[in-house]
Image (cartoon, rainbow, N blue to C red; front, side, top):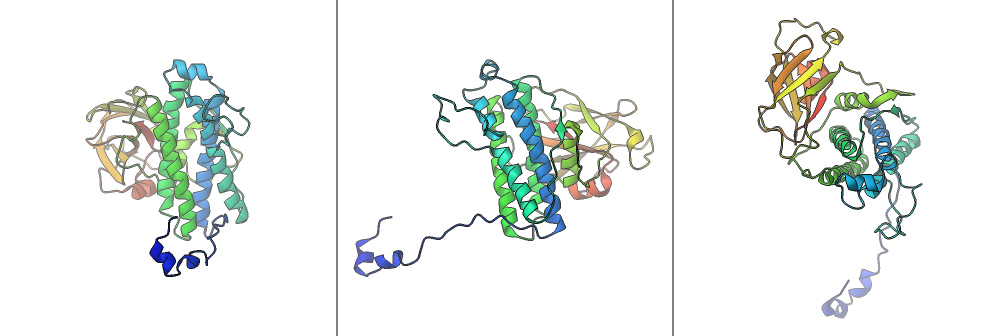
Length: 337
C-alpha cells in the first residue's frame, strides 16, 4: 500500500499499523434448527452422489478417450479436480504439476459432514450408485443434468437457512463452485456455459426424487417422500442441445397411474407443470398417447434445465404448492438448452 506524503506529515502512518491485521477464524457455522439439519443432510446426500459421478468420470476414461471425443487438453484432469484427486498422480508438464490440487466434491461432502457432526447430528452416508453413461460425452451430459439438480437444491435450500447468516454463506459458496463446474462441462461439449439468465431452484422433495434414478441402494435414506416416477421418452435430445430446443417441440412422458397417491379420473385432463428458472411454473395441457403416456409441447421461453411434473392443476400453483399437494409424480428433468 502506498501512503501519501500528507498522511506521513500528519503523523497518520503509525496509526495504520496501530491495529493488528484481522485474523479470520475457520470455525464452521452452527446448526441451529431441524430445518438447518434437513437442508444440510440433503446437500450431503447430493454431494455424495456427485462425488461418485465425477470420480467415475475420471477413472473410467483415459485422457486419450476424452481427446478423441473432442474435449480440450486437460479436461479429464479437471474432472478429477472436481471429484477427489488426493490419490491421483502428479501431472508432469501440465499446469497442475507441483500444485496442491483441490478436490471439490470431496471437500464439500467432508465440510458438510463435519458441520453436522459438530452439531451432534449423524451425517447421511453415501449410497451405491449406477450412472447410465458409456463414454466421455454421455458422462458430461449426465454430469450437466445432475449438477443442475445440485444447483437447484442449493438455491431452494438457501431460502430456508434463516437461522445463521454464516450457514447461508457457506452453502452459497458451494453453490457458486457447482455453477462453475457446470459451465466448464457445458463448454467442453460445445454448449453454452450460461444458457439462461437464471438458474432453477428446487424444493427438497423434487431434488431428492430426481436423485433416486441413480440410487441402487442406501444404508440410510432421508425422511423425504418418494413420488411416483415420470420419465421423458421423447425426443431424445442431442448432447446439451445447441441451439436450444424450440418452443412447440413435443415432449413425451411415461408414468404408471396405478402408483398415484390420489385417485385420478381416467378422463380428467392432465397437465405438465414445467418448473424453469426463477420460480416460474408453466402449465401445459397434455395429449394422451395411451395409458400412462402423454405428450406436451415445450412452452415458449423455456430454456436450460427444466423440470416437468404431472398434475391435474392447470395453473395457479407455485413450486412449493406443487410439491405439497399438486404433483402426481416426481419431476423429470428436461435439458432444453
